Length: 432
Image (cartoon, rainbow, N blue to C red; front, top):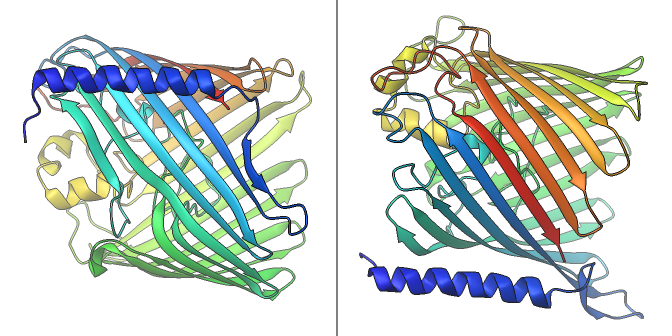
């Protein structure tokens, strides 16, 4: 149904009024204690977060992909998190969020690509619980959703967690081979909240250093649901995991491990997926249905200033493309689009690498530099960053993105990162 323009304008003004009122009334500099029973230890605690984001982009010179060279986007997120202890061994969490995004006309509501939080419907949910409040073409979008709604029961032998919850798998810091539900993009800046999925997790402690976990993750159909078993354990400074089961229509098996080697830390992931459809770029062991993903990373903190941390990762994605120039044709395939949108491949091609440096220059300021590159075509991007913790309730983050590589031509990609815009990202996070 088309929304009248005057109704859209009224809703936009109403949203701004709500934000102003919340920012004004949420005066306490810590979560609000809604209730607390000293005898039983039961409590209810409400946290409110307001994030104000601005993004400016200078797009590549390809009118078919980018109608305008310059684009500006504003994003507002207002989130309420309610944590409760409702019994000695039972806790619960509910999170409700509003997201509003406005972009310059012709830039598209998704300008900025993977840098910004996506507005796309979240997969792995039996019911979306995500509603559109208002939309004005590709210029303005306002949505709200219930992103957490889970209950956890703890026992001596382990725990049961049921409902909408965050599930992150693997050890990868920028890439992942096994984070199959809500993976972050390698260039996504705001990673404070992973989008929730509908799931039941049962964890059984087989010993003090090992556990067995069953994960059932639900979509609106069986072929959009998952059932995984995970066994993990520790031996000295080495930990490992084995994951097997079904993810969507794919069979999946994976190995994950991390270890401390001297003053460094290493991590690795290797996953195999057997898919019902064939893949034009082929797979492993002569089968175009057997695909693999892998991550290998190392990190080390040097005694420079307050501690200079360097991290490097290599990523291989069997879901990626042998030739990025095929992307225009492949995006006409709904199955390829579905896999790409839900994060089956965090990179467009098959071989990628990342190097990240983080240096705290004071107790409140941290500088960083991220380098991403395609090992197939040599394109990449550099992203310097600055994070300032201005107070207990305010954090300011600034990121720049400078890509290199062959730019697109006539709507066709010619390199993995050449179609990325030059971008400046700034965000103020306010916690109440």
